[in-house]
Image (cartoon, rainbow over all chains, first blue to last red; front, side):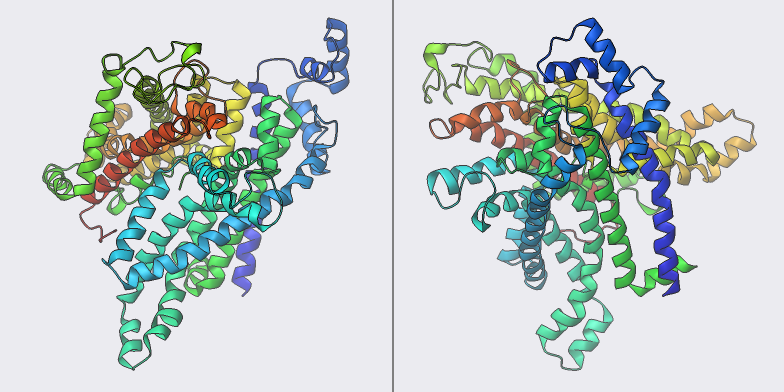
Length: 315
Length: 304
């Protein structure tokens, strides 16, 4: 297991330059924007942005310093979990983000659960009953999943299930019933793609010798599928899982906006329209960190699941 | 995946170590295989129809897509307005038809920008190698550390609302995957005998790149990038839906969908039709893309 530990350590060290790069880009993003942050901040506080007031605030915010000094100061703050205060609410950005993150996490995890509940049975069944009705159905679902705009699916679900049938609440966060429509919307595309992926790797595995051996020795089909085939078929899906996590995080922005879900995605969109720079920076940095860590976890679990990869990486 | 540039059509096309794919006999085989793929042909037909609709939009629209008639607000479908009107009394069908032009041209321009960035970057990284390659690929790694839609969203937001800015944002995020792929293709072509022969006979490096490397790299990239348009249409309309892209009165499907939202109960077609248009176009490009990928990859096992 020493090799795995080394591998994790190596990957963690590699994250340092990547995150430095991420922080530079995040900081630079703000300079894309037209307009003076000091002026925006004064306006946000309802004050007249006179030239003197703007100049005084620029000095106070350190906007007259060279860019690298500003970056250094910002980074030092970030490392102390201080990302400044929101122009809009006046509360610390870290607090704003962390207080909203549970809602986004809840939605993302619910979407992932939906993906698993849908994709695993659909993928297995489509592989077992290849070219049968269920296989064709899953292919159609996959095609739709890759082509349906998530925001449209969300609105259609609201229209049918909340407005017409009144089964689910239209928006907001609350109990389980509030969670279903947004989670299905967020997870649908991924679930459809996953089912196909799992089917393909199931078919691949089912054609291999050890499955024939398992069958030849008279093992019941449910054990052949459940114990031998599925375990090996899941592996390729794990990498996809990590890559899709970023898609889910990104997708949550739009889904949260549609369902008025009080997570960080919706907060970020509001902040973009209000030009609340510290929040935008904090949001981008936070999301990149989560994304990078999720990918790292996937890589590690991949190594844990498949000893062959561990050995390969050692050499 | 609904994410940006899921680049599904591009996977697997790299062939064995990026062999030149558009070989003559291979190409003929690919066309034959594509002709047998009914779904891909269906996609091709829809894509052609959509492009034609975009080109001939002015002749197909029953009404002026931006003409406001407040006395005709939210009118139901009728002879004059086949799909009814929106909250400002504008003809929905005309707006949908004109929207084809907006959506396809923005996606195409974003794709052009992506290729203009990724081809030089990928080629230089792959051909020059060394620290240049290292530097460029680290930049790629850093950009890949962001969830792409979030980065595009923030870039578009910082630049300010507008279709051009959305295109720039989508391109700024989208070139990364292409650059990495092109680099891989260049790396494999670089080691071919004909490149070595050219180098041995004293051909200048830039001539080698332009005459021997690029033609062998670009054909698969361009063919498949064209078919990646579906995911570009999705991303751009998603950003427009959030209010960052097309600004009124430009008829763009994503923003039309958002405009129709409040009238879901009285005029559901305002929300249903633009979404349907996006879905059909994206589906058609995806079908064609999948078919083309399978056709170009004769070793490919049955994929569905």
